[in-house]
Image (cartoon, rainbow, N blue to C red; front, side, top):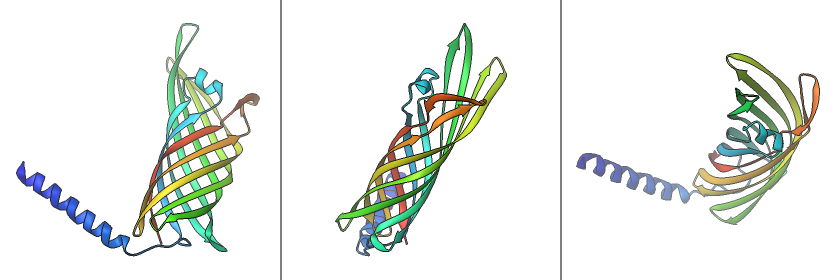
Length: 201
């Protein structure tokens, strides 16, 4: 037991020393970056609440490059969110599964609050895949739709040399969903909040 404790303490000391050493190498604004995100996802339309799939988990990867100005970036984010729930319709239990895949093209403007702390504000357009499946006693039915949308967001990142960690919030608006050739009054508009880690190059 003591061996593991000593090993963990030594590893933590090495990691801290490497992080502090890397922090001396400053990656300024204007560096390209890649990040991986894990977010809480909440669909804001009440129809998702009625289906008990309004809350979900979202994973994404993003890539940004500077554009004309070291503070201005253009980039791409591709993610995958999902949710599942159970509802009861006329005495029958229905399992509902939802898959959501946003493909976003974003621009953002970064503000260096200090050498290690960066705030970014951005907006963009998106094309989003939504699939809903319902299962009743082993009989499945479902449909999918592609939705145009737009989003605005904010990120706050702490730089540690080439690496960074941070938090993000985003609100996305989409057009109404069309399922089984029926236009609905529901959209896939959603709110996301979570964290990310990544590196600059």
